[in-house]
Amino acid sequence: MKIMIINGPNLNLLGKRENDIYGDETFNDFFTTLQFKYKEVELSQFQSNIEGELIDKIQEVGYTYQGIILNAAAYTHTSVGIADAVKAIQTPVVEVHISNTYKREEFRHKSFVAPNTKGVIVGFGLQSYELALQSFLTEEGSDGI
Ligand code: DQA
Image (cartoon, rainbow, N blue to C red; front, side, top):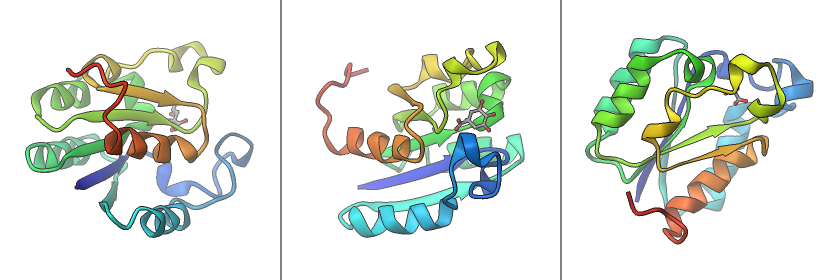
């Protein structure tokens, strides 16, 4: 099973960015642990601060991979382009957020992407990515769409 994690803007700064909100671990350290734990999955990751590059990557893997775990970060709340890309592809997408965006500023409560996803996991720290991964491994609870 091929699963790709796609991370949006500023998530390259995990570990040194607003540690009280996003924790102390770098994404690469977390990703290495995840790969080790889920050896049966062909897990890859991509990060960009550029909206169009995120759209290109979603299009590139969106017909061949079995799942995309997407944290579009700030673009979640602004990007019709990323939302359209998620809608266009065949690969199911699970949206994740590290922080509980519903506890934060009101502009973070809106996701353009969420209506086009299989589901959303919000507020469990980096564990949000692992929970999303598990959702691809056990299809139970899926709405089947
Ligand atoms: C985030 C939440 C977004 O509102 C924010 O812009 C981010 C990270 C999260 O994972 O908690 O950059 O997507």
